[in-house]
Length: 96
Image (cartoon, rainbow, N blue to C red; front, side, top):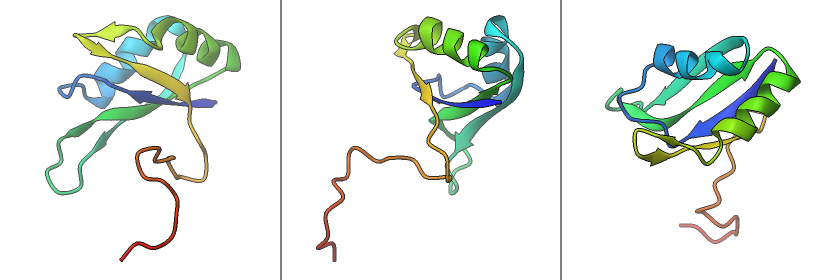
C-alpha cells in the first residue's frame, strides 16, 4: 500500500472518520489519527494507507488543499523510517 500523511484534519476525527473520508477514492488499508501522548487528544493529523498507487494519487489530487470542516487539508506521500520532517525546526547543531 501507499502511506499518505494527512494534515489539517478536524480534531474530532477518529481513525474511522479518517477512513470513511478517504474510502471514496479507493480501498483504505489503514487509517490512523495521531494522538498526543499526554492528553490522548488528536493532534490534527494522521496517516492513511491506500491499497494502490492510483488510489494514493487520486487522494493527493482530490483532497490536498481541500477543505474539511473549515480546515485546509494537506496530503502527501508519507516519509518512511517513522520520522516526520520538521520544517519548523532548522536542523542545525548547537541546541542546549
